[in-house]
Amino acid sequence: MLDGARRRERPEENCGVFGIFSRDHEVARTTFFGLYALQHRGQESAGIATADGEQIVCHARMGLVSQVFNEEDLSGLTGHIAIGHTRYSTMGASRACNAQPLMVDGPAGQIALAHNGNLVNANALRAELERSGFPFDTTTDSEVIAAMIVSAPGDSWSDRVAHVMPRLVGAYSLTIATRDELIAVRDPLGVRPLCVGRMGTGWLVSSESCALDTVGAQFIREIEPGEIVSFGTDGDPAGPVRVHSRIGQRGVRRATCVFEFIYFARPDSVIDGKLVYQVRQEMGRRLAREKPAEADIVIAVPDSATPAAIGYAEESGIPYREGLVKSRYIHRTFIQPEQGMRRASVDLKFNTLPEILGGKRVVVVDDSIVRGTTTGQLVRLLRKGGAREVHVRIHCPPFVNPCYLGIDVARKGELIAAKMTVDQVCEHIGADSLGFLSVGGLLDALGLPEKDYCRACFTGQYPVNVQLELDKLALES
Image (cartoon, rainbow, N blue to C red; front, side, top):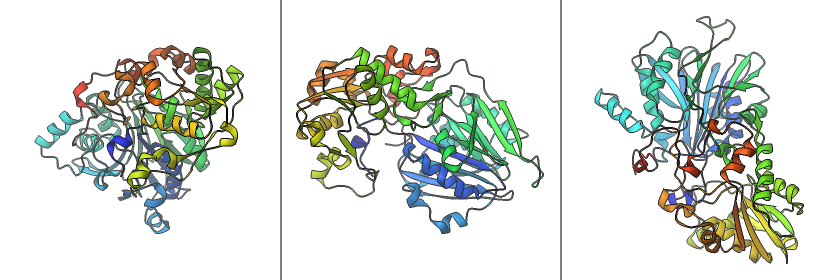
């Protein structure tokens, strides 16, 4: 795997979860394609667990979704319930034992669990469970959640989840498979997205609505913060699907992660009732008003910044062009490039179009700057491609604080905007000018109440108490 420093050149995805309850579809195959649509949320490992009313089976390994599964693997995953996970590690090392879904046994029975998010109190909860004799097989906070659920009192799995939720501090969107039930859970802050879809008589849950579109399902609604939604048949294997919703823990506020709109989510997903593509376009428009530039063309760093670059071009009247071409097949890889290639890592991902850039004053729009290394390489690449001037515009505010709720980003001391002024960052990356979208401009672009969003990475105001020295919440180094 790539080393930690390279992994933190930009905010990294968190995880994607998916689930289905259906007697009319091949649930493992449907989940495979759902995970394929969520591959952008994590590229380290993937897995699917299925249940048939009698038992739960799971197949999870390191690698991309397409690397982890073949036809033989899918044929062995039978039943009418499936959950899936694609992982980027933010807590617990990137190793096979941490691949999800996790299978966990306890006094209440067995479950499979897939988790997107981070708990800030996982270490304390884990120590408590270890003192009671619970044997851990992984180093993740996800197993802490599962262990608490299978050890909780209650007449139903929904009761057990609700019993546990007040003790979980942080971010968690969950899909859970029991032998005969599918359960979806979203934390009371609503940090990470989770939605419900329908396909014939089947029900689905997904981190993003784009995965529902991929498998041909209808988007029904987003799961509310603090909500538990369960799908089962009330003990009758052939009976109709019963859908039950309850509030497991009522939150005092919402704190949806703004980076879902800036970078993480696919542009064709709907979050908080907003199409992500349109929100990013509006970020670009507001960026053009706040940070104009005299230039000949506007280009994007593909792909997440493309809608914002189009918005910038529309608002500024400067023509939009494609000046960078991204290789669609340079994903996270287990093959390490040799040292010279590592220094030219941007060249592995992007190629310039000199015929477009030659002699031009260029505005290049990107989603964020974390350490500054990648942005500096991009500026040099554009100049090498013939750009006369390079004006960098970022469609979010300066990233000055680490995240403790599911984003793998650098430590505070590694964040370039936390230790340099904007002018100093501009000089460091070698740009002719640099401009960030303001926090106010970002919130205006979202068009929803300011109090509903976590923006601690820009302001330092976290929605939960965090120990700043937790520093990435790793259970191990």
